[in-house]
Length: 293
Image (cartoon, rainbow, N blue to C red):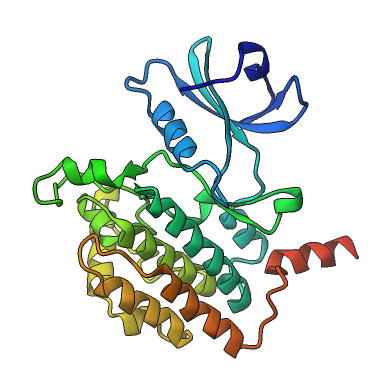
């Protein structure tokens, strides 16, 4: 991996995961990993970021270095996550905000998948807004669980090699993620669909299930996801969301999604609702109102 010189790579650590480039003065994000981790998961993540370099909504990695007892990945400092903004907005987004996010995020997944990468952990915490001129742009981050699609396929004869545990985050994981089988493009899109419903409703049907332990809770969530119909999942929402899930579920294993079709489903809904694509999100309005008090 080509890193910058030791002088330009040197960062002054501040609090948490932020730092300052002592040459440029730019604020950057820093992700650390102890050198005892072998093989380095962080190095793999940095390589995946670099393979996606140049794509809209993909953070740029400035350097991957080892300092003292830590490996460090230095990358673009971004704004708040969609989970942070969701909480800021009272744990509910308007239909307009969700549709504007959907347009960007489907495009992000199309780009990631076109580079043969499967994210495997799509959730609000891993989707961050940009800063300054990119403040209205959504970034997809945290490739710690991501895998190369071709590598995943070659790891199993049938393409469905079972693993003993959930891959992803239980609330938003696809059914395949729960089963521990090799994931493909439709799995990221399934997780993204759950995000849309979460934003519109404030919760998902499998939240709050009572269980004796985490393993049992994950099993209950899986059973709920497997048994719920698209009609029940999207009840009370515009038809476009059921159309989205019907399409995702119709895909063959590793079938190539028609991302343009999915974007059109939501752009048509956006137009029918008479919304203006002005990049004014719910949090934009709240921040403006707070500033004018």
